[in-house]
Image (cartoon, rainbow, N blue to C red):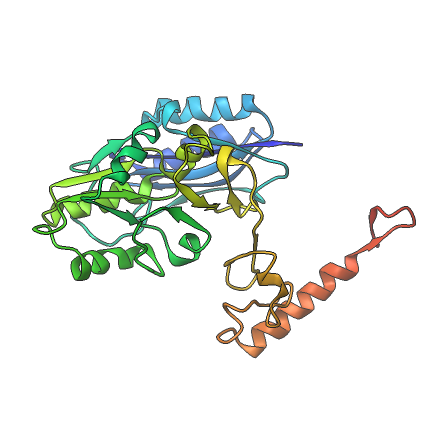
Length: 305
């Protein structure tokens, strides 16, 4: 079964977040949806998947009615398996944690640039191109000439800007992220910090990979996504990376050949700091998973009772 995956967000003031959650829970309970939707006073953010396009259409109609979400702003892709275990609708203080009160996209933000115009913008030698994602995301793909802040979490981006950029010197800023939401916050923050000419990729990397062919693309590598696919490439096809169970870092085929990699336990990125207790616990879990499935006589997998 193929699942349709919809990555979405909308910054819109929500007066009663608890009431909206109740409405959406009541509406979504009858649908075969999985994934996570966050609701905060500043808007909604989530990635939801359904077993049919009809289910996704129904879900989007409800969100459009309740929040004004536009279908044209949703990023669609396909997953050959169920990408999430279940549906979660959570209340948050922010739909993307940044901890900078002045970064309010409902009041101020940068200029949207569509995927079709993005290559021209970042080819301008006067433009500083910023990747606003975390280091475990940037390590598997980015745009040519983009600066990678090497941040561990999005909240670190503010310090990077204050320490490394100057509104008087860096007059043109172009930024991007996975689906566009972090750039909404980041561009609002940079405008508040005095940067006057700030642009961001509308729909993020996902929309770029959906709309721009590999032949015309300036994207290098794959794009980290927050579901079981781990990464996607041009056309939003599933990539070649898997995830470390311990730390969540993307692992290539070469990474899994590293002497410090142990399936289901740790990898070269987390082996040094993951505790002995955690490793023992993960090894037990991995043994249980391995023993639960064994090959049958015809080579197919069968579950052992």
